[in-house]
Length: 194
Length: 164
Image 1 (tube, rainbow over the protein chains, first blue to last red):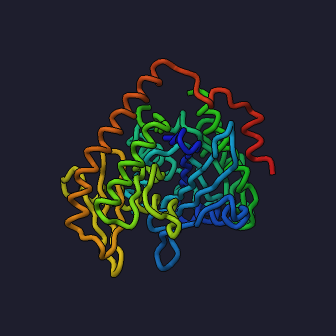
Image 2: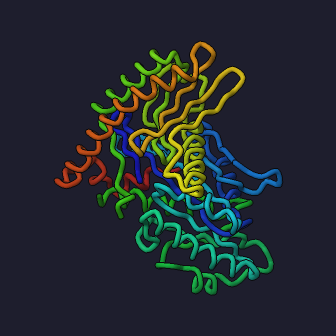
C-alpha cells in the first residue's frame, strides 16, 4: 500500500525481501546500506538474535530522489527466513508494495527455496495480495559458491511468472542494486497505472 | 486487491491531524506525539522531534503493534488497543486509532499515565473523524479516476531516479 502524502510531497513504498533462512536477505540490505550516500539513507535496524539471525525484521529506509516533485522513499524490510518464524513473516508483508525473493543457489537449499516461495504465496494471499500481480523480482544469490545449481535449472524451478531474475553475490554486491532497481521500477510503473 | 489501495493524505486533512496532535501534546503535557500508519510510515507529529529518529520510531512501533496484534489473536482477542512502555525517564503510550493508524505519545514525569490516557481518548475520537473524511475523499477520487500526478510519470522519470 503506497502512502502518498500530498502535504509533505512524499511517496512511501514498502519492499520486502523474502526467502529461506541464511539465503542472504540481510546481506542484501547491508550492502545497500553500505553503498548508499548518508543523505539518502536512514538508520538500518536489525532485530536479530544473539547469533545474528533475523528475529523479526531488518529495516532500511532509502530516499531515491524526487519524481514529479514528490520525494520517493522506499522502506526495505527483510523477513526472518527460518521456518518457525512464520507468524512474524506474515506481519511484515502487511501493506507491501513489492517483493524480492532471495533464493539460495546451493543445491541442498533447493527444497527450502521451493517451500519459501509457496509460503510467500500463501502469506501474500492472507493479506489479499496475489504473487501473480504484485511487483516481484527473483534473485539467485551465492553464485560464487562451488555447490550451486546451474542458473537455467534454478530458473525452471523457481521462476514464477517470468519475473525479472538476477544472479547475485550479495556479500560483494553483485546483482544487489539491479534487483532492487527492478522491483522499485515495477512499483512506480504500477503507481502510474492507478 | 482491496489491501493495495493507496493511502492518500491531502494538505487539508494533514493540517487537521497536525492541529489535533498539537492540542493533544499540550493538554497531555507530553514531550512529543506521533501519528503512524499501521504499515510503519509516519503520518504527522507534534512537539520537538529533533532528538528522535522518526523513521525508525515509526517502523519499530508498527512492528511492535503488529506483533502484539498477533499475540491478541492467539488468545482470541481482536486486538490490544493500548500498549504502554515504562522507562526510567520517558514513557511511551501507544494506541490504535480508527483501526488503521497508531497514536504514539512520549511523555516524562511532567505528565502521568492517567492524564495521557484521558487526553488520548478524546483526541482519538477527533482523529477518527478526520480519518473518516480522508477515507470518503479517497473513495470519491478513486471512483472518478481523476488524474493523479503519477499517471504522467514517464520511463525517463523512473530511470532518472536510478541514474547514478
